[in-house]
Length: 405
Ligand code: AMP
Ligand code: MG
Image (cartoon, rainbow, N blue to C red; front, side, top):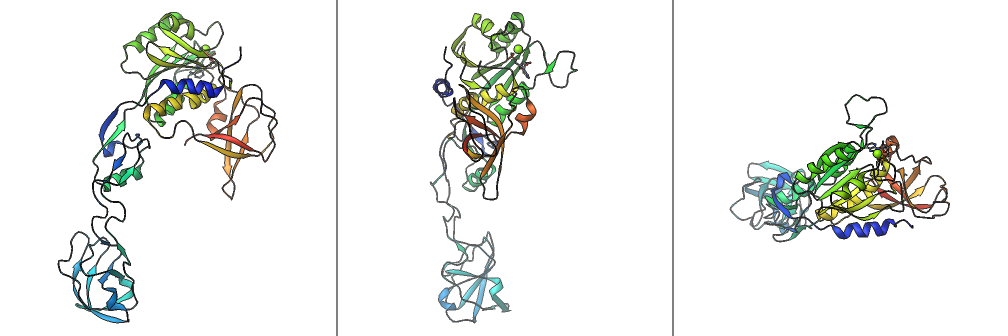
């Protein structure tokens, strides 16, 4: 039977997910969260014409001929406006952030003046209308849209929203993703490694990928490859509230010990599809487990990761209402030849660096063992090889998926 193309699998999975409900949080708790609604400024910024420099607020018409001596009539530091008006041949001493007094139409910087006495300043250079003044609303105006729904909130957005006097923000609730590893050979990191055992690196790998992308992890741990152990975890899952996606790891294939489909099916799993034309990751399962979407990832870490990037990430981003769904695509220039590809879409762990013109130059190791974590950790992108892609040559442009960070 022909394997399902990656695009088709992605369409089927994407159709199952919708943006989750929103929650209203204090601004300082929104870092990394996804903005759920467009945000509009509550105030104009700056709220008044402000000086951008330390100097003197003057009327440009008084400085047509220079040097010229002006009468200093007062001060306007930040936070305290001068109450009078700048009239013919007068100036107000002003500081950065100070409100520009009425009558003045420019600020001359201190360095271009000479203070002759307590009430006299000499201007040594001309000044043009509006110079060194930040007009009211220069940054943004009240009710202006500052940030669009679907962005990931950064420190820079938080600074801007604070300046716009927005103390509470609507963000999308974090998707809750349950993770379950299966395998008789698996133990947790930090435990003593007995003969024939390996550490379940996939729980930490996928947990952090989920958290990195704005999700919350419910780690159900490791189930041994037997019915009773899996059933115990199913009970645990059923007792856990509000799970948005259930991920199993391992046991997805056709071996005698691959029990995920068999056991979960007895307890309500409905398979949507099994096996995709992807490498690594062919035996991935997608279905629904008692109302919860379920992705059954293969156990090899690179297979699990490649499938997670291609299918779990879009699901997570759709639930968050993100405006960029899935890993970002880009292009890079091959540093070496590549053989022709087989009938599955290949995702090679690869590394690019930018040359002095900012062009990405990419290398992929020719040995892409899907159990290797070292090549995965050193990768900063996945090189995408479509099914039946012909031999690629050094210098060819190839499509990549960017891995962040
Ligand atoms: P499976 O998909 O269960 O046949 O597992 C394929 C390979 O991945 C085997 O070598 C497993 O030992 C390994 N593996 C399965 N689950 C994990 C895990 N959670 N962490 C690391 N390796 C795993
Ligand atoms: Mg296994």
